[in-house]
Length: 197
Image 1 (cartoon, rainbow, N blue to C red):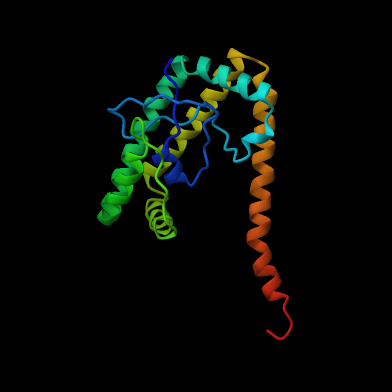
Image 2 (image 1 turned 120 degrees about the horizontal axis):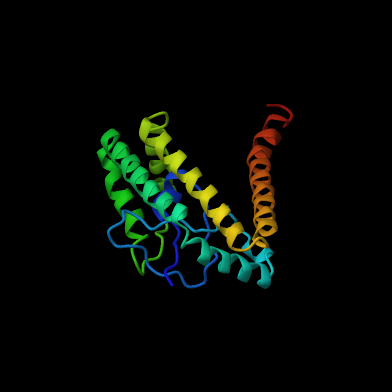
């Protein structure tokens, strides 16, 4: 059965930490600019907080959702939008093309997502900022949101028991995001509270 992979290109473009819950993903179509994102669309860095039963339920619902026509149509729309966003970034800064090629190569069948250096993340962030507000960026954001919504609907339709699991993932993600934001703010807060400065 064909499985949906993490979109290395899309995740890098958005800075998302999309995580695939499938243990052995199969390759994406070779004609695509990147694989489709994980059907377990909510980002979750701590998948270990799910029980084995929850992981199995999530994986089964994911596999069933991958057959849904709305999900398949969303994947096509998202791939086109990602391709257009890439072209917009390259048009603004042609020097970003090799980095985007590296990211796309990591989404190829049998490949591992590339490890980006801090400098590459900074370069990618600048390229993303350069297209903020463009029609391409808006279309990519909308296509991604539609994909995630369609996947979640299809997963819940395939197995209603997955609804609470998706809620748990969303809560865990929110906690992780809040912790990151708190940690990022802490050094600045403590530096400004230091006496004599």
